[in-house]
Length: 220
Image (tube, rainbow, N blue to C red; front, side):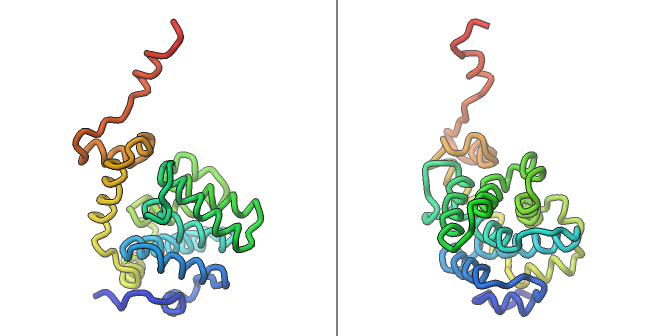
């Protein structure tokens, strides 16, 4: 049975005392809670817990504030607050970078936050980047059943989901993806959202690189 919904970072740490706590992490948590829909907030919270657990399992040394901000902000590009002209990961990364910069992160840490979010679904790149970038992708991936999911005991997954319930996550996330494919298709052609568009959105048609190369301005 699901427990009461999360209202404060103190509630979360009471359940998971190994999570790091700094004023900036609490601020990022509160910002995500106040501006994300409930299902998406719970997803980013689970993603952060998973990332922290994977980091502990692998005894990684990393910047805990960067990973916290990146995982907690990684889906703002799916919301009106993170709306913009680019693919949703880039829109969200831009928003998170502004937040990080405004709260004292230096240029290097801001770049790590940006890369973590912009690349979070591109595992063929992100897993070969800095520890923070890779860890963000891995934690988020656990919430979709990526390989690190198998490293968790069933009771661990159950405890995390009880703290931050999924709230019809599969259907609601698919709805977000289809909305972008329907309303901003040009931002989705080189993302996983293309798969949702091709399967669920009537009239969606992504351009082909085969056609682009064959019709290019060169004779050979």
